[in-house]
Amino acid sequence: MPEVPSSRGQRARRALTFLTLSAGALALASCAKPPAFLPTSPGSGTGGTTGTVSFKSNPCSVATTLSLSVATAARIDCSNGGTTVSLAGNGASYLVVPELATDNATDSYVSYNVAASAHTTPPAGASLAPALRSLEGAPGATASYAGARLGAAQEAAYRAMRSRERTLFAAGDFRAVSRRVRAAMAGGARPAFTSVPATGSVRSFHVLSSFSGSGTWATVAARLEYVGTDVLLYVDTMAPVNGFTPTQLQQFGQYFDQTLYPIDTAAFGPPSDIDQNGHVIMLMSPVVNADTPISTCNTQGYVAGFFDSEDFAGPSDPNSNQGEVFYSIVPDPNGAVSCSHSVADLSYTVPATFMHELQHLIDFSTHVVMHGGQPETGWLDEGLSIEAEELGSLYYENKCPPPSCRTNPSQIFPDSAEGFAQGFLYDSYQYALLPDTASVTLHSDADNGFAWRGGDWALVHYLGDQFGHGVWRALEDGNATGAANIAAATGQPFPNTFANFGLALYTDSLTGLPRTTAPAADRFLTRNLRAMWARLFTTSGPATDIPYPMPIQVFSITNDTTSYAMDPGTTTFYRLDTPDSSATVTLQFSAPGAQPIPGALAPQLAIFRLPPGH
Image (tube, rainbow, N blue to C red):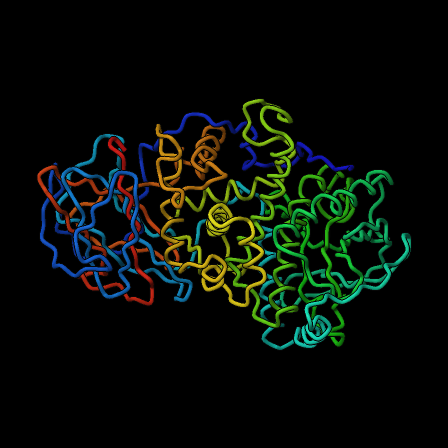
């Protein structure tokens, strides 16, 4: 079937340095950025080759000494008011991952300490020396690296759309349509659809022309240019000249209808069909182009497309198009409206945006319209949408195994996967730099930053690896939201899943060892994140936002009781090396003053016994 190949593109794409990503050698960074620091009284540790100090026994979920075989893991639940766990010593080394595994908390820093009753200085290169750092920003903030990924304009559009969505939901604007759809679907049958309009027919649409405040809309006339099995492609009659040729336009429609739409719906399920036309509408309009001021194109990027949930509002809403609609820019090679966009530019950016926004559309229509429930939490909804982008990349990766379809045969990704892979690659690297401050479970589209988005993609991808891709559809069909939805879809408590996910970020593909060294639950089965991040570093340097080959930094546990900070829904990474002379070592994970961390924050430790030399 005809497809529109991804262009090499003409815009600044610093994040696309992964074009030369190969599975090259991996290395640990030689310097590090330690956990967020909260000023308290000085710690009691003195450092040196060996350190010992006494901690009051206050067991978490394991009251006896925990003895792990090499390359095995355990989860220690400290939500019972406990603060300590006893580990077998005798020279054993452990990766220790403190976590606050909840999505039901205030997005603010939580003071904590992790310390050991005895420790040794780790071998050179095996652990990174701690040095205090200042906070990355105000509580709830995550780093956003301007210029590295020109997505600020698109992210701002997401925030505005989801903010209005929440306002409309609270006002009950979607109830009438939901009642009608659920009544029509009573008994399990989807409503039959009516006939589609004829190709060449013209209809009017209301298109969002400003994202500020409550929004403003423009009424446009659009011609139906392509009728597919699942997608109707309309083009605004006022689209600039010198855009698509007739052949290109038909190929574009076929690409979205026959390739992209089936990928999304196979993974996440079909959307609703409130207009009963059996299709999703794709409307290409210069009004969308004009949503981005030309002055910001080179600094913030541009809005390539969006889904407007107001189209599910009742008939009394004058701005609702009463149907499932994806809005997109049109080609504008001469920049008549705003930024100039060639057909090749659209071929690069719009497909991934379509995949992303179609998942949002499916998720909203399933949760709110067909189930009559709450919208999915922003963090999980966004993670699913970035996973949808990755599915576009995987389509081309499967079609083009190495070294085919690559400008450089050593590339991990084929050229045609560029537009789909840029988001999850760069954003997940940013998350791995800030795992203790970029909350996976407390952010939404109302928040800035790429890091938390990368974390949520990594979590959703991990779920697909561990529970099969059917888990994504189960998340769409679930009546619960957020962590409770994940627990229902996976059949295990969320803290258990979060513990294994946190370990997998580091224990998957341990340097110099077979990938199967770590248990399957502590690995990413279909992506080698460590290899991708390392190659991104190699091909991006020098870059201040991509500072290390392995962005996850590991810090030594000593008997220092200095307090650090982490957000709920985050993890941080430590290493404990026990002395040969100590049969057991007490590990303390507590609030300042050895007080328990509140159980509502779901404090826990994920512990992995490291192989010798790691």
